[in-house]
Amino acid sequence: EAEVAQSPRYKITEKSQAVAFWCDPISGHATLYWYRQILGQGPELLVQFQDESVVDDSQLPKDRFSAERLKGVDSTLKIQPAELGDSAMYLCASSLGTGSGETQYFGPGTRLLVL
Amino acid sequence: GEDVEQSLFLSVREGDSSVINCTYTDSSSTYLYWYKQEPGAGLQLLTYIFSNMDMKQDQRLTVLLNKKDKHLSLRIADTQTGDSAIYFCADISGGYNKLIFGAGTRLAVHP
Image (cartoon, rainbow over all chains, first blue to last red; front, side, top):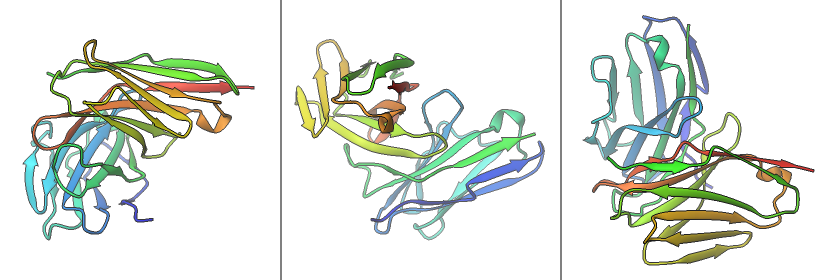
């Protein structure tokens, strides 16, 4: 069964350092999502791509976060500089499209700890 | 903005039924979802219901939707220890399939 791949699974960094996370969606899925899940909370959407274009980044802290999906396939989420409050699970998901009800399939996540 | 709320914790005995409740505010929600998250893992889609349905059954899972009260529930029959996890309710917001999640209900199953 096809799955969303993410790496690394775990990342420990010091504040002010740069970190990057990678996601490879299910083959053929045009829509890719990055969510942040703070411990004890539900996931919150950071950025959404349709192919290589951003369709929603309203909750992305653009002063330190950036995301790209250059060829419309895999994607990278970067944080520079990392802050203590960025410690969270970063989840990537994909779906066939953006139509209402298109099922989103999630990857295993990258757990980030900022010291 | 849209909001989804869930009770935070549920404890049940193995073999009993579990009922996890959720309320939402967006009256235009078209689909509502239940996801399961095991410790340290990503989210696994359990089931979903379209807004024109009142009930959906899928093996041990039964979803009930009360649109008037904006209330969604997930019933797990014959709950097993492997069902211990966090369960998230989510609905669709806006035109781009954005999911709005509740804070999750931690289900603990004891012998």
